[in-house]
Image (tube, rainbow, N blue to C red; front, top):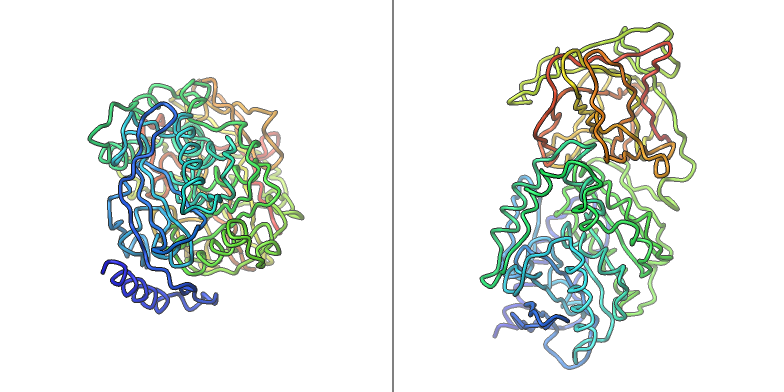
Length: 558
């Protein structure tokens, strides 16, 4: 009876889903190509190497035979069903009753001849033990689950990983251990460096960890949980990247040990959480068969869309089922060149950073608040009141500085921007710089994009706490500055210092006549997971341009 209900539910959901796809989506609808009904086995206990038992749900075709396995592993609760998404903020998401938050939908994959396993990490959901998010122990558990799944009677012996955000992040360390049955991975919206990608942006502490830890982790602890480390407290107590906590939680140099075929995707606008680290992960792994996809849409809506699923399925069909299809001819990088909110074209490239790009400089001129192709000849400066605001939404003109550049010809900015500034403060011993890149038409109307939190996002974001301005030159490139964040160098009032601000990657088209807007201020520019705390600003911050202080914005153009 359950299997028959599932068939009707799945087909009905697919008809509803595909009937509500964007008109811009021209991919072929993915419908079940096998008559598989669903068999569910909940809370199977799997013993880890140290005796702790983890709980898994197994969703598989209700028939004889063996099938490849798709595994997701995380702490949000595999049994918190159905997953809740807001149709306004998160988009048009249609999934079955079996799809936990940010994990592959068993209904879709089982219908196509796969087994889906959803597993609770230690101390979460229905699993025993102590919560160990991002730790090496979590990776060892993932290894053991992969090997368990690879030898079950219903398994073909090929295991793939798939999931979004934390269900993507956990894949890196597990894949670096090279479990024998791990065959391929789909890492969607992950990160690789908890300090720089999520907890501190440019050395400025993020608020994200506090709400995430309580709502996503503590609220999903298992009844048998034996403890957890207080990550928000540890992160707050360790403002430098050299602290041992970040060495324990980061994958570091082990990314190079990943050699399996990998499909990696991230929203190009998810600044402050996923964009930077996911791209860095793609660049660092050693897989000879790897793909990177950059999109500008709502991240969960896109992950579950027929468009994205078509490529996920093609990837797994080839590497888990050995199907001869066109995945090997798909360009290595697929990205959306954005023009506005949900408006862009699909482009491809052979690698990231995009080969053939040009690094161009737009020089700041504080005398008229412009960005120009040539250096500013005269020395000038401009100041803004950097004192932290209780509500950044009501910022006034004197609390930010804006520089503008009008493009005379179509310009595509694809990659990481860098802002070179000469700055000082008249009162404080430190400065928090919040940088935004925006787009405006010829009449100064701001053109919005899907942001990391809402539909009124900007082109790109960057941050820097000036006392953490020191660069690690062994890891910095001409395009991307890499801050060591392992020392505090405070400044004195009116001391002018030179800094480089990393602005997270973007893929944006500017037409002739459109304007690039550079915003610099003392607090968050857009509301989202980018929100920050413990702001050090007060008094006025001054930016210097011209003569021997040539502040500039470097942009990668195609």
